[in-house]
Image 1 (cartoon, rainbow, N blue to C red):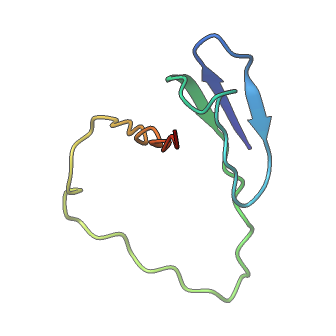
Image 2 (image 1 turned 180 degrees about the vertical axis):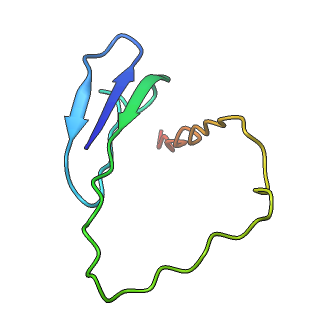
Length: 76
């Protein structure tokens, strides 16, 4: 389940294995997001490996990317 709020647009909600959410024009900035993940029950005979004791790599900051606007060619 995913919910997304874009600037000057109503909150959108989608459920599925893969969801894509965008504002009405696909140019609105994302101002809020909520993602829910359901965990599947593991069978009793599955061995789960121990977690590594190393620190995670990367930044703890959230980065948002916006696609570039499509350039329309005009024929005159």
